[in-house]
Image (cartoon, one colour):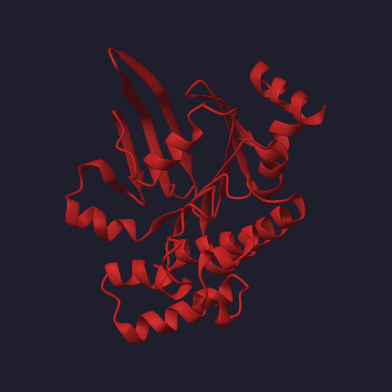
Length: 254
């Protein structure tokens, strides 16, 4: 028997009003993500992949459709119940500098989600120490501010913040796009290691097909707000079926 997916969407849509016009960012997306899987979402800028990620993180409300997380229909939850569930899914953002408050030390940045969710002071400190170690930074980093770190180090801090509440599901939106290639590899390896150690499930969003191939179990290709192809990573890269997928692969190999 196949296990029930951790994440499932049905006919998910998101429309934005632009003056008198309506722009459809995500159109009729149905997908599932199994527990412990990394699903890669790839496509050109503006295809809707970030909007899809924000809907799954419940940072953007869908216009229509449904989202189920571990058997719970998220869109029908009360505000209190949704707040409880949100501990279990977190987001890593593309720009590690703009996503971190420059006026807060790393200690304060990591403490914030814990304090918001009612973790007491002693437990907060213990968890913060665990987090900074998990992402490979020294405890001395806790006293410093975001501008004192390199881009790769800042992204490690962003990852630590996403892990603070011990989530099951991480939405990573272009998490290595702003980094040098050598640093990209370090962050990707860190994400892979954390996935195994903490039994995480990932949605990994990127425009870079090589990065997506490296980290993903399955890959969904988005074009103009729709998923046009979804397959195991090995199969998709060896035998792309949709013309748009073939176009993307040809461009990445040129």
